[in-house]
Amino acid sequence: MAITRTEAKQLLERLIFDEEPPREWVQDVWEMSPTLGETAAKLWDVYEAILECCPEEKLENLLHSIYQESLKDL
Image (cartoon, rainbow, N blue to C red; front, side):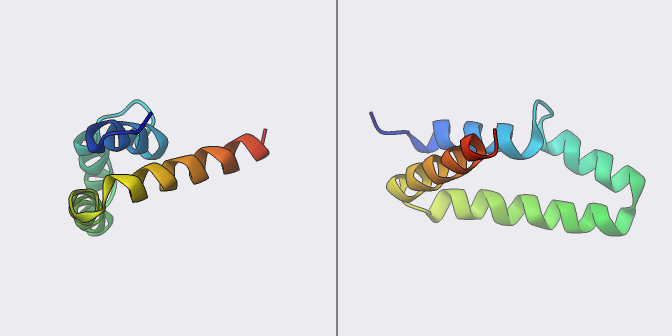
């Protein structure tokens, strides 16, 4: 069964940010270091743009690849 863009986004966010909402992560980084916070905000913007323009099939392939690699590490 195919993974939708929304599902892919949710799975990638869990992989990257664990259980913390991404905006909170950016804010936490910003509070530690405004310079790094600005970079974190840019990273988040680019991440969202990539998710929007990347075809769902490619997102699904990326997720499968990431999860396969993580299983190898177990």
